[in-house]
Length: 462
Image 1 (cartoon, rainbow, N blue to C red):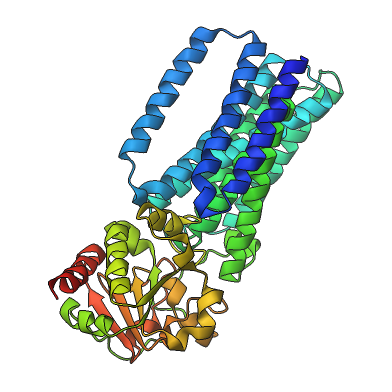
Image 2: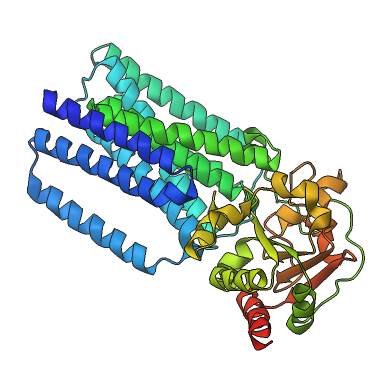
């Protein structure tokens, strides 16, 4: 590798690290994206300049990729970002898998270390690719978000994993033996097909409530596959970038698991959410008490401390801008407004943060559950917008509930709770929400955006 290319890769790696650090804070996240993109541009240009490639095909790829990206950026709604992120993860997995496959075809007599890297790249990349497609289908409701399970499913997965391991070992041993092992081509085909099948079978038994964790884990897989591909083609900057994505994805996955008080093994193998609605946990008793937007306005007008808890329902209704306008109206009459963001609210990590940032909600107004729960009794009104499982009191009160032990935003202890929902249906977990029938809870039924807009209109009319 020439000296100038090595220096370019070092610069790109530094920019990746700086960009990742900036992504840790909302006020620097956009700049972090730009810095990381600049690093990738440096890496790509340096690689192409030293590669001696046919640039006509490179240009074709750039045009196609830029076109798809431009269309996606303009047409994909914020509510569709979780499934778009899943597809991006899958694209990274496919790219890495194809790199490993092409390198195997190009140099079938590669050394043992290279052959091992090829096997790792193909397995992780293939698993990430099809697993991400299934996650996309679940998130976009093209298939059921409920866990899909069948008899002896884990036995089949274990057998398939063993087949992939044996096929991979056969490919590596063939390289160590400098070729000559029989059926090595068949072994590689089984390795490839087995990895693709594992991705499907690993994700279908995971329920919609765990999709934020799955998205974070698949993101990590895409990074690990890219790092392995870097070893395959001897590209240092790809190893660095892939390692950063893989490590940060694993850390985020652990954070999400901690937020749900569950282990990663429990997420991957428990089939959470497979029980029919209302079966698990104690039966919810009592009746919900509806309220109109006009009556809710009078309560909010007297409030001096308001807590907003957004959830996926806010994203579906695209109500984030209306919520920001309501917060402005409340602050204009002297109320303190904060937004409690649960780590697993929505369908991907940081989903609510992205929506509120789009509506220009100040980063300082965002709080985590641990920041607000100790003083919840002092909250005059808690407004729950489409959130469900992350405010369900069963998580702290009902040992028989699947949610038990999961940290929540304890809005049930606020003086008054407004829950904005279309119906009484439970959330992703399928567990009925005891909050809906509490004495201090009022249900504001209907489209969240319409309800919030009605409240804003009431403030403006006075």
